[in-house]
Length: 352
Image (cartoon, rainbow, N blue to C red; front, top):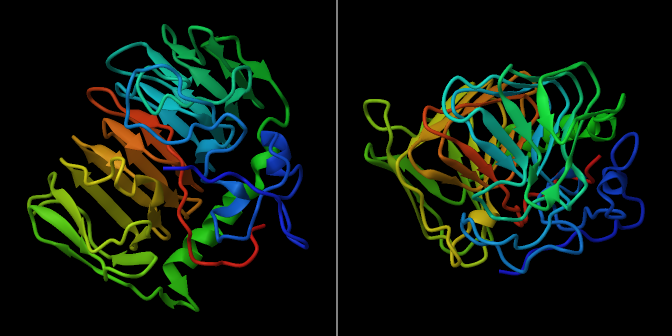
């Protein structure tokens, strides 16, 4: 599957407030022509993107991605036995690491198992707009073998990072506009003129699984879900998709103030699947939990700035963008893997 590239802005388009995000990423300008996520987020960016995305593996580095894989508008907290986050990471708030189980190490940027597409060597792997805190006896690593990146922070710092973190007073300032833009876009994807965006398919919790049945033809498959994806007793369940045309974008709007996804199985997201065109959108929720024993597939967008998302699945395979805070935790290891989002979303006007 050929990955989309960032292209120049059309005439009259606007960019992020402050320093343009595209300039920070070294990409030139970004496009608003194909109804993408705001700020050029989503696709692999830069001249060294691989031609396709491989399932999580520990092979050689397949290429380099200059775009943001994980954006957190609030605080990014690492706990439990969480292991690593692949790709470029930006948090506007604090980054804190206090693991209570497993290895004493947390990897950022480049990881042992994932898509094997880190940010370019020497670039910012982790940008922190607030304080950077690593618990005593633990290490935050932004390097693997010959690949090494930078950790920058704007506030106070305590604990050990390798390589040594660098203080930059306005480290996250260029990305500040993304928070509001993500909130606006998340709401737009879920609603049109205050009403729920018309669905093209149905989602039914059958107890043992949630079945998403599309219409078999629309290029944008929309599902509106007002329930948790959990079994009858609140535990793990499966999920299945039917009636999704080849090449279609899948938008799942998880509406409601509190939502949980707990699954023991993924779905068809391999080379012939739609992982890179699947977006889970949480426009309203203040509390989100993504757990279970399966590798979670697709990108995630959380719109509420006051929200907290708790992630404990073995692997998150897709972009993760939240206007709120993120708790990365698990009882037996948990990872974010760097996969692009290349879908075509509803037009929400020119992104700020």
